[in-house]
Image 1 (cartoon, one colour):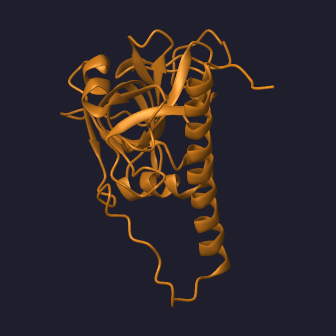
Image 2: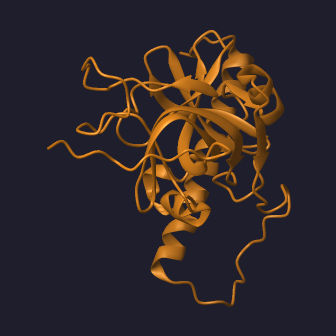
Length: 231
């Protein structure tokens, strides 16, 4: 006897939440998203269909396979995934579940999806993100992007949130979570005692700023000497 999953016939498509990294094509004309787990090597668009990552000839979501898009029911559960170090720069996506789907206790696995809203977290410095800038990694033909403020994105390939939405099309809305207002990042109280993790974070921030200043000084030095070493 073959067991069948219970059928659902909702009056409206279900919705869910997930996280993904934004990506920009090498020529800068297309954008998309890449997942954080199964199928992360295959960027997808705002409105897209799933395919089996194992190359099997069935239509996702197959009952005896893991293929298909994945999302969770609860927004807070998706936001919690961004607490891990490798997912800090991922965007929170609000998606509409389209086509065939399988319902699980915590979410869906499904055939098609539409990304309705993408929410960017703050820049690494804590300021509200104004751009999506080159994250330093990617997939063949695609640059991964990360939320950034204008100051931290200087010198890197980047797109504004509005431009990302326009390139994506399909009515996508891109917004930024509130961070610290750019230029208003407060310095720690000199009299306060910091924990070891806080001291490590402060040291990393200072090192990043020092590296940036050194690169700027080196660039200015090259301009002054015409790029030639002095004997």
